[in-house]
Length: 196
Image (cartoon, rainbow, N blue to C red):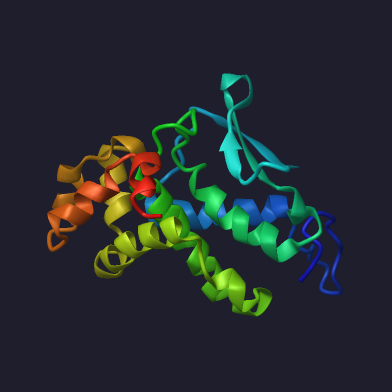
């Protein structure tokens, strides 16, 4: 895998991908899948810290992706975390509190999609999410298979993931059990406690 931190010119004349350009590529794809990014918070870049990965909100007006420190030496780990965290840039909440199961489910689903599309970059253990994220992805995967444009259509009416109601989900995912839709609209932190 190419170095994700230093862009190099290839023989073709193009440049290699970096963590910055990969994130932009993910955002392009995510906007195609889930609708345009809310721009209340300006995207401020990617950084690394011992307590990552997550997004945070410096000065109350930017959103920054923070990946875990080992990503500096492990490009596959960086790409894996970046895929998940990029979803949180679509409709930034302004806080890590209040994120719904729906948002984490979409982030986990997209993360697995990237792993599947670039499987040669990832060892087998990268293809397994922590249980609560795997459970969240399992809730949304069959719904997106049945109706891949649903989230994009819902976000025309309600752009913020955390404000998407069970009723809005039911309009697009008509065959989904109410219990699944109820779980998707639950706060992730509360729901996840029951998944351990």
